[in-house]
Amino acid sequence: MIDWYHLVLFLHILGTLGLFMGIAVQLIGMLRARQAQSVEAVRLWSSMLRPLGRFMPLASLLIFFAGLALLLGSWGWSHAWLDVSLVLFLLAGLATAHVNSTHGHRLGALLAGSGAGPVSPELRQILTHPLPWTTTITNSILAIGILFLMVIKPGWLGSLLTVAAAFVIGAIISGLVIRQGRNDPAMTPQDQGPLPASQTANQR
Image 1 (cartoon, rainbow, N blue to C red):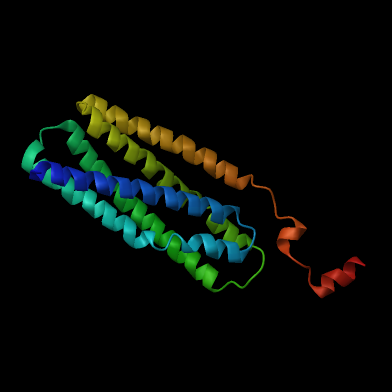
Image 2 (cartoon, rainbow, N blue to C red):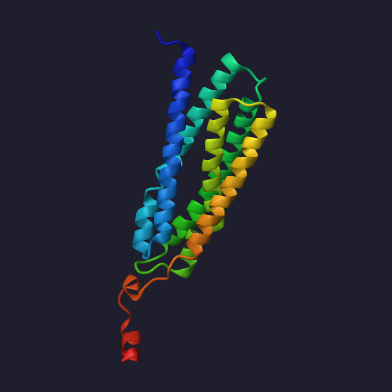
C-alpha cells in the first residue's frame, strides 16, 4: 500500500518534470521567434507560448503545495537546503512570472497591430530584449540548483554556495544567448519579400 509520503513525493516530482518541460518549450519558442524573419513566423512560434501561461502556474503550485506538505509532515523547518529551496523557488517564480507576463502582453499587442511582412525594428527589439531572456534562463538554472539541493541536502554554506553558483552560471549563459541574438545575421532580400513597385522602379 502506498503511504502518503511517497504519494506526495510523486506529485512533487511530477510537478518538477512539468516545470522543466515548460521551461524547455518556452526557450525553444523564444529562440525560434527571435530567429524568425517574418511577422507570420513570429506569430506562429509565439502562439506555442500561450498555453504556458496556464500550465506553468499549475506545475509551480503542484510543486509548492506538495513540497510544503512534505516539509510540514516530515522534514520540518530545521534543514538549510529546504529553507533555501523554498525561498528561492518563490522569489524566482514570482519574478519570472511578472517579467514574462509583461513581456508577453507587449509582444501580443505589437503582433496584433502588425500586418504581414518582415519583422519591424520595434518587434525585433522586443524579441531580443535582454530582460525576459535573463529571467527565463536564470530561472531554469536556479531550478537545476534547487534540484541539486533536494538531492545532496547540504548545510547552510553548501546551500548558499549552490545558489550563488546558479546565479553566476545563469548570468553567463544569459549573456552569451543575448549576445548571439544581437549578432544574428540581417534579413536577406528573399526573407524580406518582394519590394514595393515604387522601389522596384527606382532600381531600374
